[in-house]
Amino acid sequence: MSALTPREIVSELDKYIIGQKDAKRMVAVAMRNRWRRQQIEPALRDEIAPKNIIMMGPTGVGKTEIARRLAKLSASPFVKVEATKFTEVGYVGRDVESMIRDLMELGIALIREEETERVRTKAEANAEESLLDLLLPGSRASSPMTSFDAPTPSPAPAGDSTRDKMRQLFRQGKLDDREVEMEVEMQAGPHLEVMTIPGMEEIGSQFKDVFSKAFPAKRKKRRMRVGDAFALLIEQEAARLIDPDKVSEMARERVEQTGIIFIDEIDKIASSQHGGKSADISREGVQRDLLPIVEGSVVNTKYGMVRTDHILFIGAGAFHYSKPSDLIPELQGRFPLRTELSALGKDEFLRILKEPKNALTIQYKALLATEGVTIEFTEDGLEEIASFAELTNQETENIGARRLYTIMERILADISFEAPDRSGDSLVIDRAFVQQQLADVREDRDLSRYIL
Picture 1 (cartoon, rainbow, N blue to C red):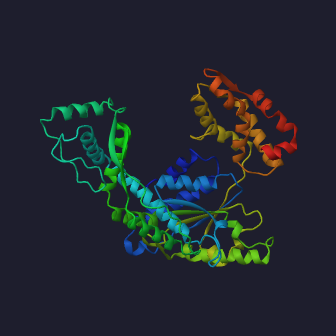
Picture 2 (picture 1 turned 180 degrees about the horizontal axis):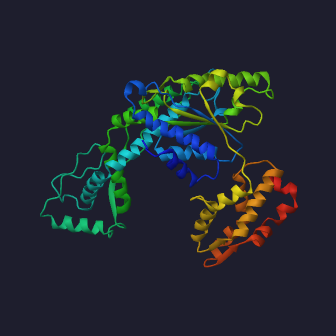
Picture 3 (picture 1 turned 90 degrees about the vertical axis):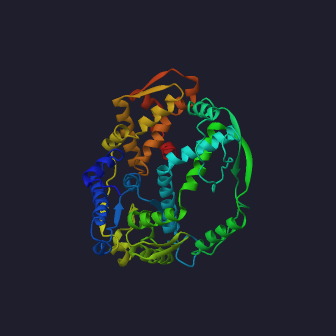
């Protein structure tokens, strides 16, 4: 688990997200508390529950990005779900337990990737020996085997000068374009989609597992370039070196102790005066189903039972027509921390265009550079873009920083289209250029409602 201090966490978040100081501080403390909990004696550790958070704010202000970056910093399994996609048990739709199963699948993928990296050196050595067997059949005593259950190849004989020369040529990259024939694993059996009753999706995955065992994977010989064959052999060797049971156990531990679930649009399942009676019943049903998951329960997955007691839940919503107090009292109590994210204005838009490591200006420069076109944004040009984004958000629907995507695409549409024919050109995006590209949208207010 990451041992970053709250100040360091906020500093990392500042590289990608502009403003929202209070929200960053709150999630930084929540993340640090998880590290602190791991340092406490086990008897007390299990008694400390995570402090779940509700983020309130309009769309496009950074709610999802804060949670996503936080999970990446801590190497935690992270899943984003939409509260509106779930239905009460007994109705057609996804049940709330599916979010835990999704989180477990992501945890498995995360651990498998880490374990693959851990055994990569040995997997590459084994793959190299297997590849040399394909290039020089019979060059060593052991027969060439490339299946998942193949034994670890023995070292090449010391006196095998041909094999050693071939090894040197391969390491120098001189054999990458050469072709070899090797066996590859094909898809196991027929592809099946199992229809299940809502709330019983786990049974469907179990049926798939049974069919995959009944129809074992077939192997087929294929010709491919040495470079591609080596990459495939590394994957096979790494899979053979990794213990699936150990991966499942580590993933379950990681999910239970550091998992993060981001529940977006949570305000849409809150009862409000604007909703009808039947709609409120449906919303409250989802809340009631969600309550035991957030409180702490055991969910059955294909990898075993997963406890949700220490998973961090972050709820988010605009709360335009409802407020957190419209949630059922029991669920409110499970989200003790509240933070409000402020709407973005011209100053924030200008910083978003200039400061983040993944700023839109940097992205467009890199994209057009692939065509040999160089673009440069001037300060007054960026100010004009930020000003127009703020104005459009005020006059139409406020979609926050996402407004910058549509404006930038509009400004650079002609350049992007003509880029293949303008290799070597250098263009300056200044205030005059921006105003020229947005002139028709600025004049026709109705048009801006559709385009931006």
